[in-house]
Image 1 (tube, rainbow, N blue to C red):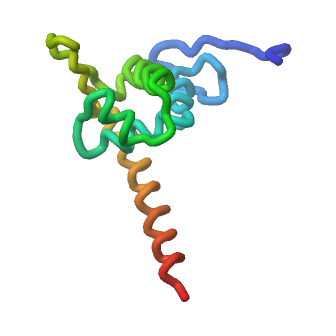
Image 2: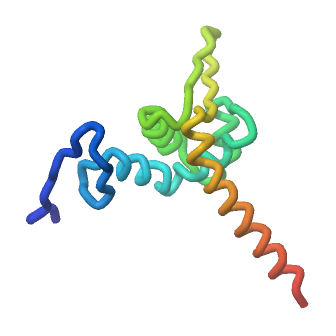
Length: 124
């Protein structure tokens, strides 16, 4: 399905062109808006969580998908990861400043949707 696809490198310092497949911003947007990325960012908005706390807070996500999503968001600089040298190791995740900045409008969107759904449920 990639026939005819033109790939063009985005030069450092050049304006990001999100409609080009090599655009770094496009990759970050894809990770943030992936099926689970948005839920990870929303789950971490209030405080940092350990891996299993995060998995429990996002119902329906498998350990494999959570690990993949965390890896992508970590590579993008949206979250941080801290490993405590215990047996077994305790791994904690939280939002970086960039992650908080990106997650804020997502949280606001989530809050608006839930508020409107609540209003609709309360209407006669």
